[in-house]
Amino acid sequence: MAEPEINLPDVVAEVTAAFMWYEEALNANDVPVLNELFRDASYTLRFGIAEELYGHEQIAAFRGARIPPGRRVIANTVITTFGRDFATASTEFRRPGQTHNGRQQQSWVRFPEGWRIVAAHVSFSAAEDAK
Image (cartoon, rainbow, N blue to C red; front, side, top):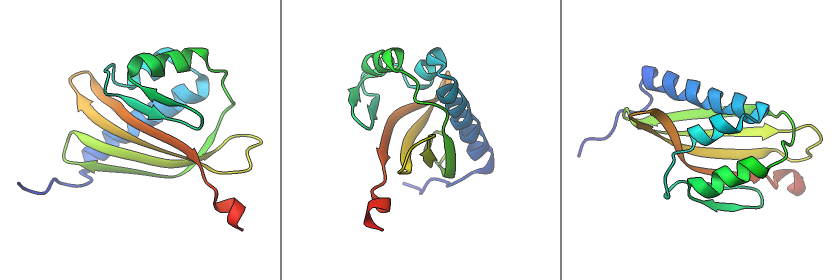
């Protein structure tokens, strides 16, 4: 098997646009767009700060009931693509009043309807505690 081409510029641009669409929807609490960007499938996962969500139905229910925590600022975002149909998006974030940086990583897959998230993980860094 040949090694996939990594970071093809056109694919990086596509995934970056999809990631930024997600980011804008997150900050606007645009639940329909957030639900659209998570693949509507039982295998889609989201591990958050205080929740483990298995499948699109649980993710959509979480989004629908969530009180938006406020706009966040992202930094150190890295989009990595593998071939034309798989990518990861990793970023750090901070919301107003937070004392720790948050971290987020997503796995994106190209489907006929476009790029969709199939797995996501959100956590807070304990690095500030070690200082």
